Image (cartoon, rainbow, N blue to C red; front, side, top):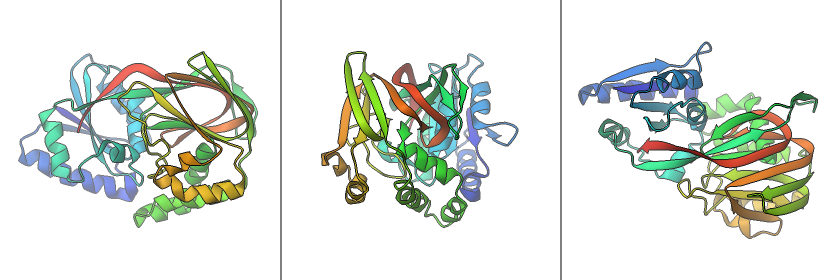
Length: 317
């Protein structure tokens, strides 16, 4: 039986409407489906954790955005026995774009009903070794691990996510299907405030890169983040490696000149943008910077490890 997991408040109620259409299609096709709605009392992570912890083969159908997928990958307990179907309903849908998802709901559901694994995707992990609050006070020195599907970021891109989360305009823009504008607006604002850091990045324990004015670095498992920005044009979520993108010594003028090119991925040709590939990167900075996984803000740190997990996610597309 398919286990559907739905955030009824997602996309300003749009996710619930999509589920109602999906439920009708599944019923017409005679597909058994059990639905679970997330709430303030039970998150998507908790629901998925419970569904996938019984030692049984299960197909989880997720309806939501990239944040929903992030919550789900952090909830999966048994990757071998879990298959994941996905109906994108978010404002960014970077994962769906990278994987070439059909826009047709019935086509997506036919794949889920068939239950064949079409893609086996890498799962990234961000390990935070020291955590800070927004005032840069240490709150933990115990390792915290957070998985990601698309990317994790440290610095400018994560700070944008932090401001978008607290923005009063995000819901309004999402309601009129212009959610991407909230990221663009905050990017133009944050560039004037974002600190630059002195950073040391060690790749696979062998090569060390030193950056003196790091604006951001992100570990890309997929090509897109931030609602369609092609940060890593060559990233492939099935190749077992991360594309690490770093921006260093970029003035505000450089940023505004480069920013439009990030949609096509040609920003990588600008001086100050570095891309390296690795399975693991250790990153240390002289000041705490904001962190995110798949656009979900998880705090601040100056000491993290990014790596490809030994776990793989089985997707039915």
